[in-house]
Amino acid sequence: MTSFIIVEATVINPEKLAEYSAQAQPTLESYGGHFIAKGEVEILHGETLHTTKAIIEFPDKDSARNWYNSEAYQKLTSLREQGIQSTFQLL
Image (tube, rainbow, N blue to C red; front, side, top):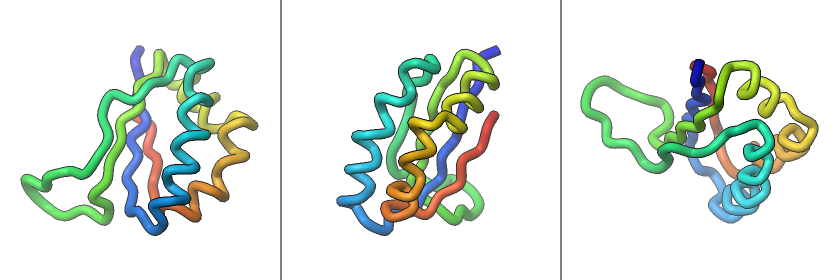
């Protein structure tokens, strides 16, 4: 069943975020992942900690987990933390 990783973020360093994004994008491909939406959200109801969101689609939960835990992606987590404060959720 198709699964999604939902990323909620607050940008703390745009340059580091750009560097992270450029390197993270290619790590998705071998796991069948691709972005289906990303950007600033418009809050229609309630509150949120982070106003930047991304939705990454994967063929299944195992593919999503395997991508997130992959060596290629995990090498980028310190760079990610320099660019954004974030949460990643698997749906």
